[in-house]
Image (cartoon, rainbow, N blue to C red; front, side):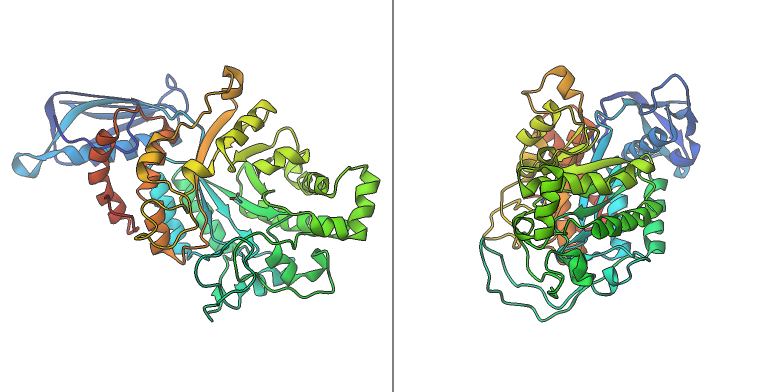
Length: 474
Ligand code: ACM
């Protein structure tokens, strides 16, 4: 049996006796988009006469190419400088339409070249969504022409806390290093185009109405204390400084979103919605007045109102709203796609409420969590998600009915970068956990963890060839 190591494993792979002898298996293969396959399906057929890749769409043909390239690595040298390729048949299609990874470039800015390498890694694993977390309390990373201070001011923090943040901490030691950066529109267009050529959609996230301290620092009139000059937050945790609910702020955000939509053609746009404290709204006269006008029982309900206002920009252009699972509790639009992060159970709640759901539960696919003994691993936010736990992840919660299960449109792993300063740290936390995640996102047959490891070992070389760091296997 030849050593074929395809990651993620295809649904069906059979190998026959014999070999195809060829000078160049890649150039020598025939490729076709055909009508008798579904848009997501592909086939690979290698006989003694040659190789044929067929697919139901250009996207699926790309997946065929990726699988085929991994398959022909099992070729052996033959006479006259030719190679002998195993006779194999692959029939394959992904289980889920949303196979994503979220990259937080707000807590630590990541150079464009590295974002392109991450896209290469996603393509290698036949994943199809890069969720780009572009804004947060600690930095604003997308150029907006209407409001230049968002990046002139909001993309930079004076320094960054050192060490692990603990709950309720108010005193910090700082590193004395100014940190920041942002992507120009040209750079973002380049990233979007590079991803599109590889069948990957870049879904932008503008996190609101919380996680907005960098924007409020740049434009204090967006906050609930416009007379106070904040600074771009130099430590982690959740900020009480959230957007105010004035009409002018709604208009400001709508203008920002119109520019964001010009950059990102994605049918999905993420408007955050997580971790939005309402203490400042409770104390604000403007917010109290708005709450009364709208007949809301609690200030926290202003979040749903605010999101619905700004989401009009998405609806105007036929884009779908995506939000973190708190959005379900804030009376959000029914057609919002919910990203379940606080637990898998939050995904059940969202599906039962009729939302399409992307499963991104922190207990299984938060790759900022430790993957080994904290005593010997680099500093991380907490948790415990070793490689095996990712391999064992069940995307669809068992408690759902068949109709509710159909609302689970996919899954996504998360890289939050509080404790990752740059590409090397991101690679270490991302890989090879992403390889195990890709098996679940694709719906690869679950054979055994050892069988997965046997494919993973040679696969690590492919990651190395992309120039991306990874955590060596134990
Ligand atoms: C999140 O982790 N705050 C979505």
